[in-house]
Amino acid sequence: MALHGDDLSRFNMLKAGKWIDIAYLRDYYGLSDLRQNNNLHTALVRFSTSNPIEANGNVDRYALELFMQKQESLPRKWFAASLGGTVDLLDLILKNRDAIGLPPRAYELFKELIDRRLHDDLLASVKSLRFRTFSDRESFCYRLHDALAAELRMNYEKEIRPLSLWCETDSWLAQKGDGDYPSRYALDFDCITCKPISVAHAAWLDFGKPMTLGPDRCSKRTYAQNWQELSAVRAGRSEPEDLERYQ
Image (cartoon, rainbow, N blue to C red; front, side, top):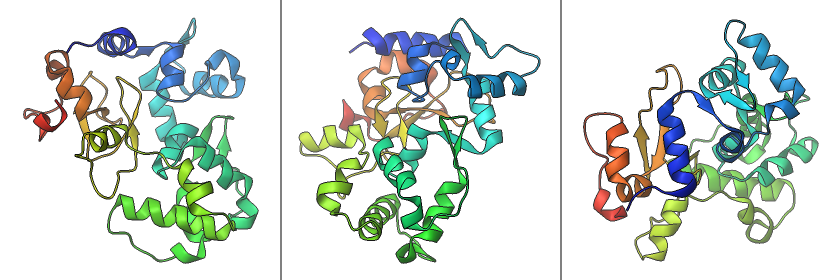
């Protein structure tokens, strides 16, 4: 199988270098056209004093990610995924911050980014999660979501679980009778398909991004089914494990 359509366009764009278009900014990062967000655009221009960060709507993704790293922030979409949830779950948390007991901090930065401190503040504010350790990510996400349901007096199955963000590859495997148990929550997004993926089903790609930034990841399903193109940009010497499971 060969890459085609939007997936092929994204692949070629990432191979070409640091510039991404408005569609990728929206689909992968969950951010709007910078020309429509004066707060973020101005902050990025000020941050990148020597090089242009935006040109005709295209954005320097390296500068964008470095800016977020320095600001210790994430796009709303990415931050929600760090909690195993959709943006709707994040909105629910922010809307009910007083009921949860979150400190009076401005978590929303430049309209579209979230301060990373919300993660630790959330765990410290939800009483049943204080000083608790978690055996794995699935345990963390489930306990957090279940605790939020209790704190907000909501029904977990009907009102909270539908706001969870599941790994698309794990869901695909489950349809084939080969999914993991428990089901995998997503943490990242496939840089080719922009679909949510878990650590367990992710492979790393090398498009020449600076080492100081987080790696580009794709689903092992994306990698296995488009091996001819993606093996050329594989990160590391060895192939991802268990590729036959995804072919």
